[in-house]
Image (cartoon, rainbow, N blue to C red; front, side, top):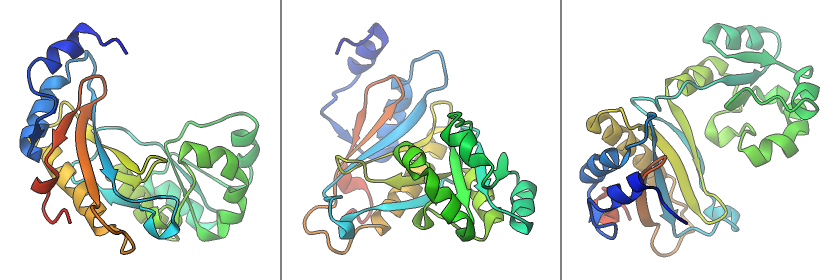
Length: 233
């Protein structure tokens, strides 16, 4: 894959094989973010888990102390008083069964996160084939299937992100924007890592965190020393 001049110039400023502690890695990745827009800084964590086994799956959520820098649109499936509660909490869209054809047939996806009360999961379940592949299906472990819709909406708006294994057993998560200060990015990084460490499956044998890479949207990645992450094993 051919890389642009800015990418190649960024790579030339450091040794890509070198591993840094988190603070130094964040400082470098901010330098690597040279696009004309405010790039997202992402963390990619390669784990030793085998997601094919249910007891080695990882899925959860964490509220980043400084948010993600992105405005998140929340859709809540609820009815009655819970629908009113969701609207009062600032949900962007609130509804029930009437939204099924809009999503299924019209391809409406003007939302980033879906929350549902447990009694609405029968309705939401019918959207599994379209929401599932997009990672939008509500899940109790991520706190998006709940009766406390006010907390769910507030947490998401405050910077709550979901982490989960992909098919290659890697976790990909945003921790903020390149415009964030190094201190704020590091706080967010430590919060995510702390949550991932707590989520270590008890059934896992061997090394849990294999590698950690920080990267901006358009720039090269920077490797973080796994050993520098407190209580990595």
